[in-house]
View 1 (cartoon, helix red, strand yellow):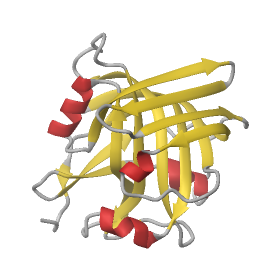
View 2 (cartoon, helix red, strand yellow; view 1 turned 120 degrees about the vertical axis):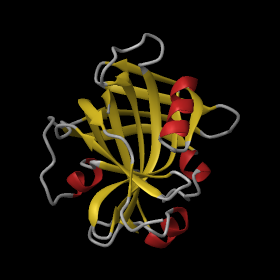
View 3 (cartoon, helix red, strand yellow; view 1 turned 180 degrees about the vertical axis):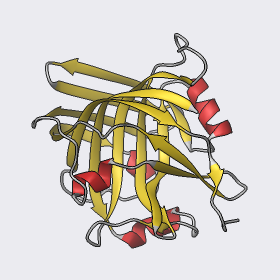
View 4 (cartoon, one colour; view 1 turned 30 degrees about the horizontal axis):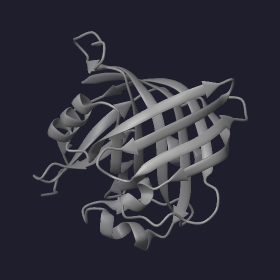
Length: 228
């Protein structure tokens, strides 16, 4: 089991056709939808205190920025979770560990987060690629847990991740208290991570939310029963 703290999370989402995602998702998984719509998400944030449960954080290794491109899936009608199309991290060690032991599509990137008052600017440039993310946003509502059955809950409260290990689809469980979610306003944004992941970004601004901090436990990958 690993322990993390996730900070300064911004969630950007766009509605996308299920058919646009289907070629990118393993056949063993079903694309999760809300009122018939599938979603693609772009989530920049900072990870701190990343470590196995039994060791303390390591300076220079345990803290780094990350941006992931994700969509939502489930298996046989259960375990609604996340499928990552890409993950960029500002730590070469974290990239190697996640690729080797978690079988997730991590990429090394140069990243920064700047905060001025309640406004945050995220910048990211993938190493060896033209894929970038540059966005500025600020939360505009009080923090609160998303109510079950709402779109906000569907998009944010995901407690499983799935990965293709090369030996079948595996599932990992994530535990944390509900996000202190806030509606966010995006004032400026430019990105090419979705295109790099194989998705044409829909026109128009994203649905945006923000959460300041959650403390997370992540359990190891286990094979899905009946899936080879």
